[in-house]
Image 1 (cartoon, rainbow, N blue to C red):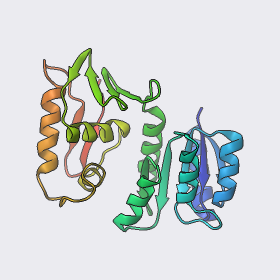
Image 2: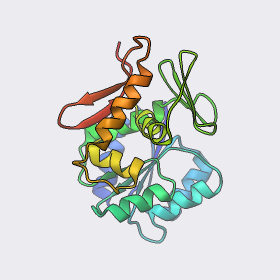
Image 3: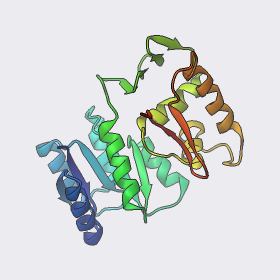
Image 4: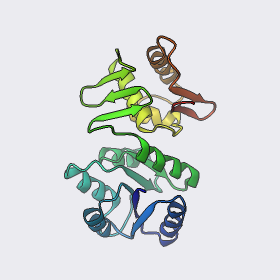
Length: 224
């Protein structure tokens, strides 16, 4: 079973997450500050990091940058009480894979953890979802041996969805990660590009991979 490192200075939050993750069957390491988190990361090599942004001594952003500076691609999920877009962008720019704003639903955190641990780095630089293979370095997408001709924006959107397979992503999250938050969430641009993606992904009556969750957003998943 995977090992998860929790770095959180709020004892109640830290202990709550520790219990919840252990009940899910994970091995859990805990740290109350960033310096200890870096020690545990070095010594124990966890499979995923949950980092609070605001911690004493060494904050979560610094931990994230330090890990990434060593070429380590361990999944990192940032936890933050801050609601400003700039703070969330700072976490992603530091190298985090995802973030959750406090207070968050435990079910959503567990889903995001599962998605990060499941998403399927087949080898370095590749993601898979069913018969779909996304080559991140070559920016090439194959589905069941068929190469898809995607625009830059279509590729970026698909990458975000596949990296978060099984997790419903809201319109605001997708606009921020694909378009840098430059477009209003009421814009129809996202819907247009979802339509483009589906047309290319589903050519030849292939099964749907990008699903609409009414009132919430979109999710990439393989349905049985």
